[in-house]
View (cartoon, one colour):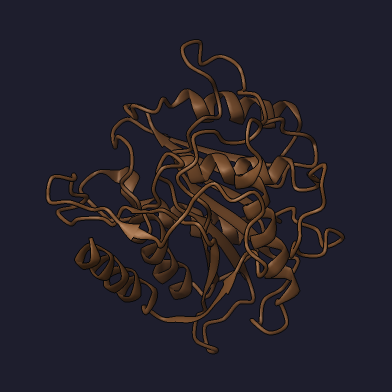
Length: 299
């Protein structure tokens, strides 16, 4: 066990050292109602699937959620920022595939990446359990609190989520003003707006319940105040493309500016590792969209 913990610590240290300038706890006094104990662990094994020929990290046992700051060079910095929520079914975080590798891309287009390590594993997510939403609110409020320090524009901070992280990004986009019945010790100032300025959902999960796949899941609840949203998924995704069909239609009905991309092939969990499938080149589409909605300057 001691060797396993040491190996996990080394893996996490290697991941977190890539161009990272700062890491902050989401809850300086410790998270409220802790349900996860012990140090974080990478439980990747040789039997796990490869993505584009490479392994991916499976980080779990996140008891002390954090926000890691990855900044572009001063010459590239556009002052835009994105809070990234990796996926993993609320059991693990795909911390490299849907985290640090995403930060590398964002930095390359001049965007500060704020990588959220939210609490996992959790059996339930919002609305049954609000821990995920509270972690997301903390991440967004910390981003705006430190906007000057991190050279970002507090009016150009968005969210990007994959799979379960896409669900979390959608929940935050629609419930940014959520308040728990009991005030949380160490919570960021609730008067700081936790609403993202834009939302990017890549193969999001849990937006529509199975088996019907025809209605929005409880707790999604978009409104006319939902931020401009980008949705992308493959038709053969086992998590079901209806997640973005149903959510995209709801946003359209509410007149929320929305861009939807559906590809015939791609499956699930490809991150941004390019293959011969067109869906894996989605970062180019997102970059164009960010210019379109004036988050990034006109090229």
